[in-house]
Image 1 (cartoon, chains in turn blue, purple):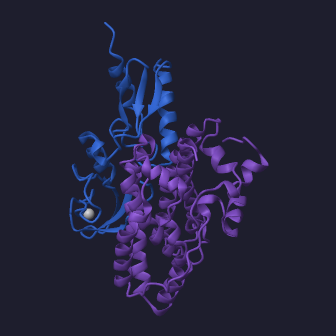
Image 2: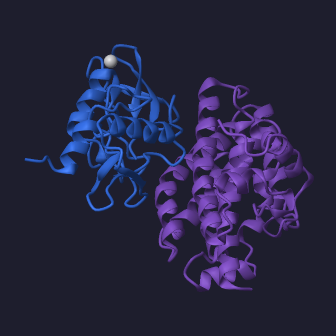
Image 3: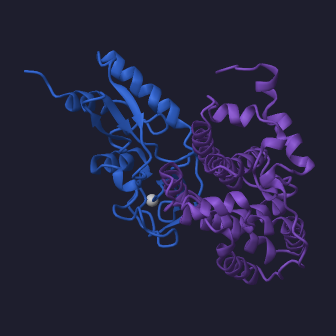
Amino acid sequence: MTIPLRQQVFEVLKDVPDPEIPAVSVVDLGIVRGVDEQAPAVRITPTYTGCPATLAIEAAIRVALDQAGLQGVGIETELTPPWTTDWISDEGREKLRAYGIAPPPKGEGRGSLKAEAAAECPRCGSTNTEELSRFGSTPCKALWRCKSCAEPFDRFKCH
Amino acid sequence: MSGDRARIDYALRLGDDALVLGQRLGEWCGHAPMLEVDLGLANIALDLIGQAQHFLAHAGALEGHGRDADKLAFRRDVLDFKNCLLVEQPNGDFAQTIARQALFSTWHELMLQRLQGSSDTAIAAVAQKAVKEVAYHASFAREWVVRLGDGTAESRQRMVDGLDWMWRFVDELFAMDLVDQAMAEAGVGVDKSTLRPEWDHLIDAMLAEATLERPAPRRGVMGGREGRHSEHLGHMLSEMQFLQRAYPDAVW
Ligand SMILES: [Zn+2]
């Protein structure tokens, strides 16, 4: 029995880490949209327009597919519908938290900037936190501080 | 003017605004007054350069002469750049940079909101992604105008001077020429003149919060969309394009 191509591709890509946040895979982040069985090609989408990791992600996916014997599977980039943080899987959210990055709450992807609720500290769970800077070490993260345990932490920006 | 040429120019204008401002902001990297601001300006620059890549790639595809985004960015001379004059203005001090950013990003967000519904699906797709990023740019810059304007005597004076320097380039943002009219009629572009009331409202609210007056009216300077640029852009390009001019087709 042959395994469907879609399943083979996802099986390979679920182990390809994001280059900037290696705790999560490109599948967890919702970068991998699906597989076009006809082309054949895997459809991916960039998270942020200017994310410098986009090229590195594509290269990592290429290498993983090649190593799995899927050299014939191409990579297609699509922009619509635009990626939001709602594309991050529940498993991905838990991995982010365990890694020390406060995940974005679900369904808030389309909310306004001002409406962002206080982030939950990934270390102690307190919501007594404040935003230090809306721009963090990568385009996808904002810099926060926990007022309970006094530790700074990254928050995955709602988008 | 043929519709094809107008559409290529329209994509170039969108791309060049983002590219030139992205490059300008990159000049701050490692020099900003605080680490958080350094990261903020670099992040905004990255967003803009990402947008530029998409718009310029689209322009190159429409043109059909095999020029990709890199070729358009690094191999065009200054007269072929279609960005507005505001984005090419020198950084000056931090307040002058923030003045440029607040005026531009406020306009940029309004533009992208409308362009999400463009009949050109490539332009609409980039606008849908970029509009959320640019909302961050606009609020970041306007918050800094308030902080500096309603700050110390020195920060206030610098903010006044920065806005005064940039103000003469505002009218160009809303000017409509033949390319703009053709693209607005085709449903590709935006009637920019209709954005002015909302822009005025947002900027006036920012100035009021910053306890600043509107700069004195000045005669608007224009020409960027047709390639008539200030001296500053040529100097910026000479640095940005140096490597590709000295070593054509060099790759990583
Ligand atoms: Zn804590």
